[in-house]
Length: 162
Picture 1: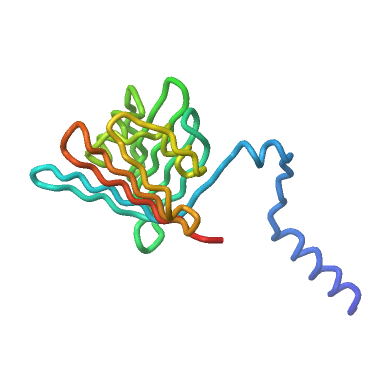
Picture 2 (picture 1 turned 30 degrees about the horizontal axis):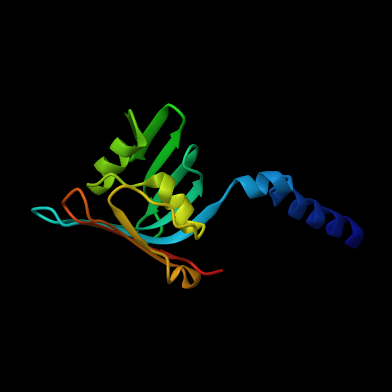
């Protein structure tokens, strides 16, 4: 009887586990991911501020940016791949002709997504009108400012440390 109970218990535990998906090292390297807090301040009239916890994955050509409330619920998701950019929010999808238009709709300013991925990797990549400060990236802080064209835009990212 005891053996039968042990067998059933182990079987139940095994049935409740989620199988792990095996990924190769090349797949792990190709999917970058960052998490933390992001804020975008646009010094327009009136000024606008977007701030949220985030998870960013992929690269400038194929990726996703998930924005979360302070309670951890998903506020919205931005997804892009060649030829497609979309905003998912409250069960609805909105499609945009470019990632630039999508980021402008969400934050009030066009964000340099291509350069942002390089900045997060510690590479100083120029982007027209933007000035980047990567001096505190080793402690997880990135600050970028768009000086031209007006209005001034300030992008702040604070990465979670492992």
